[in-house]
Length: 504
Image 1 (cartoon, rainbow, N blue to C red):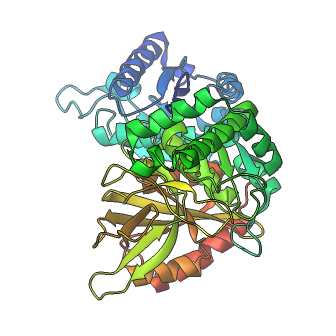
Image 2: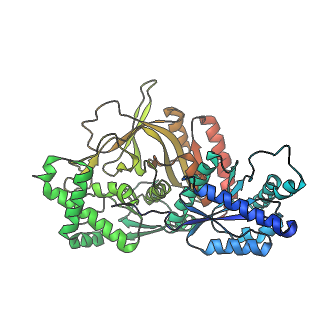
Image 3: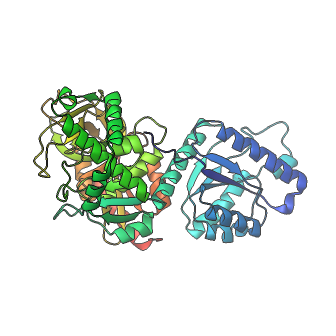
C-alpha cells in the first residue's frame, strides 16, 4: 500500500506582470528571464508541484483570461505572480476578482546585486520589480484578497522553501475541496467539542461529510475475500513486530482485525472517500472496535481518521497527510491524556484507546498486539503499540465557534518517554509544549481547543498558517513567545476581526 501522490499532475501557474509600454525587446527579456527563474525554482527539489510559466501579462483582458483559466483548471492548485517591470494595478482588478485559487506574491528580481558600474536607464527600465511589486501589492490588499508574500532573490534557498511550503498548503486546500468524509455512526453521546456544522464545513472547507450505516460496513465485512485479508496480514508481518499469539492461538482475532480493515478500505474506495470516523457506541455486528485498520489509514493510505465521530479532526489529519507527502513524518489523531507536572520536567502525554497512527514516526518498530478493551463491548481489539519518535511537531484542533470555525495550534517538541510504559497497551507520544506546559494548557483552554488534535510531524507552523490563510479561517497560535495575557488579548482581537471580516 502507498498513499497516492497528491501532487501528481498538479501545477502552479506563474504569471509575470508587465505592460506594452516597454516595447518588444523588453518584453522578450521579461519572458526569457522569468523562464530562467521558473526553471531554477523547479530544479531546487523543494517545490513538490510543477511551476508552469504562462505568457507575460500585459493587459486587463490578458490578466482576466489567465486568472479565469487557472480557476477553471482542476489541475491548477495555485497561482504565483511577480511583476518584472511596472505593471499598472488597475489592469489586475478584473482578473483578481475572478481568481478562486490560492495566490502567492513573489517579491523578487532577476539580478541579485545592483551592477554598480554599468547600471543605466535601460537596466532601470527593464528591472522595476522593486516598485512593480508594491503597485501589485496595493491592489491585492485593497481588494482584500488573501495571499502569501515571499520576499528574496529567487536563488535564495529560503525562497524555494517558502514557495514549497505554500505549495503544500495549496495541495492541502485542493484535497479539502475534494474531500469526502465517511462517518460510520454518529458522534459520541453528550460530547460537545466533537460536534460541528457539517453544512458550514462543506461551504468553508469543501469537505462533504456524510453518514453510512454501520450495517453497510458489516455487509462489506461479510463480502471481503480471504485473499485480501491474508495479503494484509502479510503486510502486517513485514512492517510490525507481530505478537506471537496473533500468529498462533489468537490468529482468528488477527484475521478479524485485518478483515475489518479490508472492509473499511473497500467502502472508502468505492465511495471516493479520503477521511473517516467511527464511534465505539455504534458498532452494530462488527466483531471488534477497529484498531489497526484506522491506525493505518494515515500511514498507509494517506487518509484522515478520527474516533468518536470527530469528523473535524479527521479532516485535519487528511489535510496534514497531504501537505506532508514525501517528507519524513506524517499526521495522526492525538488526544491529550496525562500531564507530568514535575518541576522543570513538565510534559504532556497524548494517546488514544486504539487509533494513534505510526505515520508520525516511531521510536521502535510498532508492535502488533491484542489486549482487552471494555469500551465498545466487543472482543479484544488488535492494535499497534509504539511511542512517537522525538521530533519537532505541531498539534492542531478545529472547533466550531457557532458563526465560524477556529483552528488552534501549539508548537511542541516530541521527546522520548521517561519510562518503559510497559503496562500501557496503546500508541502514544510525549511532548514538551511551547512555551511551557502551564502556559500552553491555559491558552489552549482559553481558546476552547479540542481534546482531540491532529499531530503533524512532517509539516509545521508555516504550512498550517498558509492553509488557514487560503481557507480564510481563524488560526490561533501558541509558540515559544506566547504569554497567557498576550494570547487572551490577541484572541479577543482575532475574534472581532473574523466576525467582521468573514469573507465566506
